[in-house]
Length: 153
Ligand code: SF4
Image 1 (cartoon, rainbow, N blue to C red):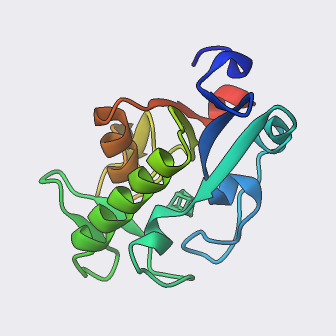
Image 2 (cartoon, protein in one colour):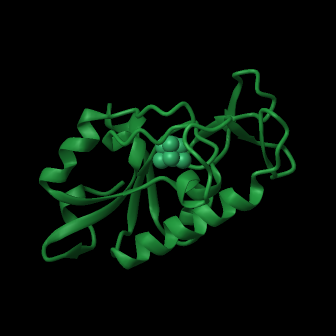
């Protein structure tokens, strides 16, 4: 990711899309947040635009955790097919990024929506594998530069 102060800017402040759970929103599958203080402090120099793609896709909080399957579908641990909700959430997150002029995003690693470098492998065994969540993939394909919170720790 380029230096934050030199990104695309509105009114002199770069706008960055951020996974809402990293900013303290209790939107995770377990009803908790995962605040990252270093990311939160970026608000001093940037406009941080929070999104939770899984909520945007219409899923409840708390919810049964989902994982991306090898065939690209997204199933929850009970076997429900949430692929459509994940795709909807990704599209809505991209729309919000465009509305706010975000050309970069900081997303929560390991999530089936937001994971940038790694996601769980679909077996619900706690095994991580290289890959991107559904929203991260769509944002990346759309030209938005991605980083995960792990790069700010
Ligand atoms: S979908 Fe993204 S923003 Fe929402 S809880 Fe999961 S990691 Fe956080």
